[in-house]
Image (cartoon, rainbow, N blue to C red; front, side, top):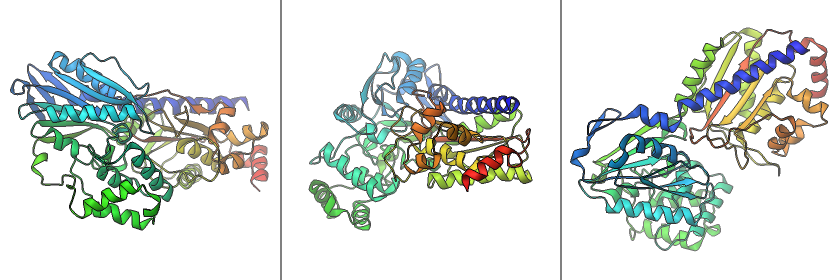
Length: 467
């Protein structure tokens, strides 16, 4: 038993180390310095070169949970070449800045600080002229951190609208369509404000597929949606009577042509706009894969685009782990399975948790009594749902430990109370703010070094419990 315990402890340590390596690969400061460099008076961003001697002013604007470290890295590179800057960040997600003003604001619930900061950011963009260069820093959380309601709307109007959209099950694309048509800054309108200046966006992606139109509601990207789409979304979910009258009247005014549409593909406003993704989920997973292989694990990346109900996704991962033990497919143990993306939780109970903690709990139930399996699921931003945890770690003995503490894991799962389940086991993944955000990273480690627990007394106990 002691040998088994030490073996599992080693795997758990490996899982945490693999997760940390993934985080390091998408650390914003490192990402900026990878994509951006200054030689003489030329700023290299990706394959583009910007001769700074040709620009009168260099402004920095932006918003997101990772915008502070991106801004700090830019200050290291550009120093006094930065004329002025303003960014909105989540409370406590800060960095020391000399040239760029940092405004802390509410996330995920927008607040007055965010609105004031967004207004200042838009104002700075408006001040840019033809011979100016504007660098825009965008990362996850930007939608909430750039709350600037369209004229005639209030912050509360937008909050109530988004609340109804979330409650009815609207997709992120549908929610963002509404956000972009009730905002003065989203849906390409920040690019419109900066025109005719040259604008370069440096983007840390937190959405599946790195869709620029979706990340932070696309403030510097052509909008593919329309006011008519917004009305159709309201009708689809039959929520028109539940929404603020101001919002309905605003969208109808847009449909009738009384309000200008958001800028679309082909609009001249985008001729001097350049968008670069400097970090994404797949980069984190590839770095994690390389490190796991260095630890001796045969490793495969399933996908960086996994979505769906958290519990169902957890069952699939559990099934893959058991297949590895039984048939050595899709690869033999010791194995590491990596996946990314962002799942969703359907709330059925009144507990506390997030999609990563719930994933680990559902997976723990599925893998109980097997050979040595460790599961870690964590949000790369360090925050999983409304908790102080990034996620949780579990293994094939997690259920046994819970039962020994007189906890029923199924009850915790049904109450969506994964946080308190793992807190009592001391198995929460606590990282604090990571200052990055590229969705979630899930790590599944499988070995076959010990006797199969299905054939042991423990396996029989687990089987009895499950029956």
